[in-house]
Amino acid sequence: MPIAGNPKKLAHDVAEGYQQFTPATLRQYSAADLKVLLFNLNIVLREMRGKQVSLEDSEALQEKHTKIHRLNQAINTIQAYSALKGIKI
Image 1: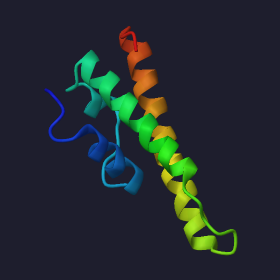
Image 2: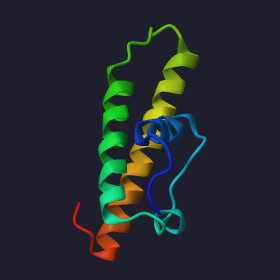
Image 3: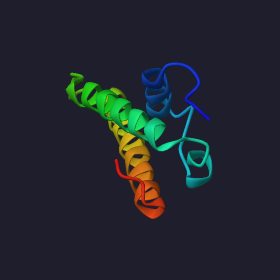
Image 4: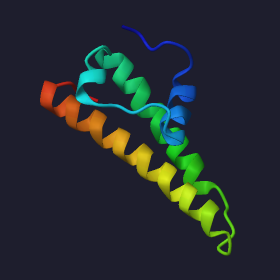
């Protein structure tokens, strides 16, 4: 099943916590779709890392780190699923 909608929007949804990937949810995507997802997750991850947050604002700093953690977790899940299934990414 192809990606419904904009893949970058899906990556932002992952960062916000609205969407998460598990091996069961990744079964519906083809190898090309997984590559597109991984590419867009890395783009959003770079955007999050480049975001400037004041060190005095602990809530914003924690939110930034949480989003980065969610994106890293999604990237690791896709890479592990691809390795398990023998998909070259």
